[in-house]
Length: 412
Image 1 (cartoon, helix red, strand yellow):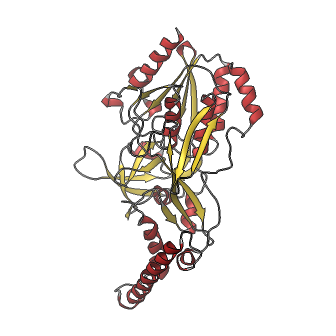
Image 2 (image 1 turned 180 degrees about the vertical axis):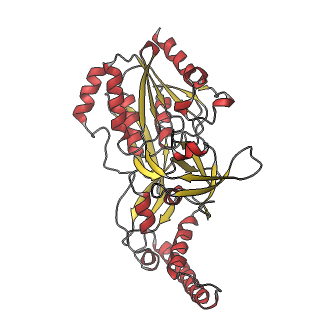
Image 3 (image 1 turned 90 degrees about the vertical axis):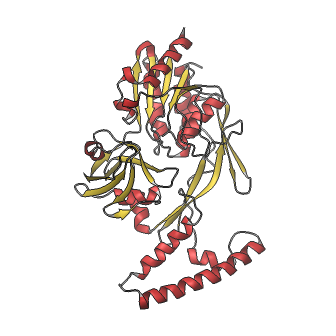
């Protein structure tokens, strides 16, 4: 199908690219957490409910006794609500899953502010394999960039509050703050013998998810830095503009992209695939959900760039395109996060996020803990490895240059 037909068809379809009956981020209201433990309405078999009730009786009773002891005997005054909040946080943390978490009402409100424009230091973060908060990207010209923070830095504390082992959602609420306020950070940096200290003045961060340009030989280039909400629409606009300018081939750059909204990733994969399976998911009970593309797509030669920071939703796109032999994948092995979380508010305005599905590429290959191995492995020069993708000189970007070479060969 030619590019004009693709653009016309996609504009007619609006948001109906793939079935949206199953939302990967739920917004259902749950009951009070304590009631969830104690009442007989706990989901599960009769034996499971009985076992849960017995354990709840033992441990909630123990917690009540400890609260009473702390209030009477602990040397300093404590806020009893803080004790219970941290008990609930510890309960979810007890899964051992850094992607599952509990946030208070205020933390949820802080986290749920617009991720396009916000006041903060200007970094993307994720939990690394050790469960610590690691910077995956420093936004260009941001306070963090000016202060000298780098991708790969681990944030140990912010304003004397430890972030070791904390979820990214919680860390976001600490790192963000009013414009003009200062964030005092303690950083662990690979290759440095000592911990590093930074003071960063927060500012308004404008996060642009999609950038585009036209390279030589009418090779289009689109860099998706994160799958923010509705980033697939920005991607569609970029494709249309490049197509209207005569694009003959496309490089999709997913380097330093930590993931984001799964449906936006699926929609972008749909835009690049003919009729095919994109991914499927499995939950604890073995229930399977399939996500498929329609027959309308941008039909030009395609290369996808990835690196060790390409994670989650990025791996959905790269994995689907690789598995369907639609694109060459070039770069470094990806991060390996192949699980999906839902978010559910509780009745008091707090929320919990829980891992509930794992996704697989059509061939059944597991992504979580494995990552995606590119078709062509290319490392960046050491001097460029810590730089933002957009700041790497084109002549020294060995991954980009190899992608251009592959497409030039395909266009012959």
